[in-house]
Image (cartoon, rainbow, N blue to C red; front, side, top):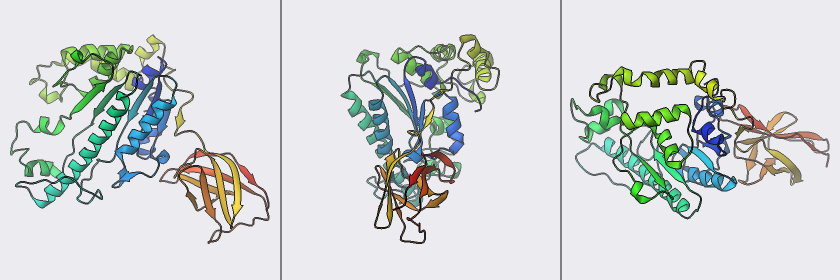
Length: 375
């Protein structure tokens, strides 16, 4: 994605919202740093800016919930938050989580049993995360909508092995596609009348955004307005080979195809006509919480105590351009031990800098240069 693409982030931003993306994975993944910027978000909080709170190999869902609440409490006005979770992502090998509270029984192989128990444990934690959000925003007066969904079901090994072992998918199953591609979702809110609730709603993911805008009473764009109207006629858009089954003709989706192409690959004539072709990208787009700031450095017992703001576990201390091993206290201080292999002549002045590095050692943020005077 190399240009601005109008999204729920930019649509809500034009109406006074603060749009934030939260993703507990590396900021380089799928070129996320660029993608979220080009979608009109004001801030992207990736894993480099998360505290060390894990379940298994990934950040815990509860850590994402905490970030969501922090961001909505921080801003003075309305928020649009797009948050991903990683705790229950593939793989689902037994022992992935330190504690499993779910037991699977039945005529199933031990391998499949272990995979299902791990997956079920992850679902349990995801459910707890949703409950935490609902409990929190139930107590808030600010109108809130939560859309909670998964982007895909797990494949469960090659050729849907676990599904087949559990007899959920049968040989030559005519419902293979729907069984392996329909994902559940829930939309919760704290302000709409209960008589407006919908159940058993089947809708394509690309049509969920316009539905939420409509529920919130937020003005959409020409594109989301079109998608909302389309969803009233064709709520499910399956693969081409299933169109006959759903009574869909190619002409039913021709406008959709043309607008989608124009937005993603074309000249964006629609954006230009509406006057926001060049205003989608936010000039104040920030990765994380901004660059680190060093406010003070103390020397004690041959250890440097580097204090400041916007420090994270991904921060590293550089002295005169050389990286020094440091430890983060989880709040506002980085400690550099000068008793080991890396020494420093404290009788001389030095230039100290804090850099935020991703796991590929690429610099994604840096502090001011702080002069450490001779001691």
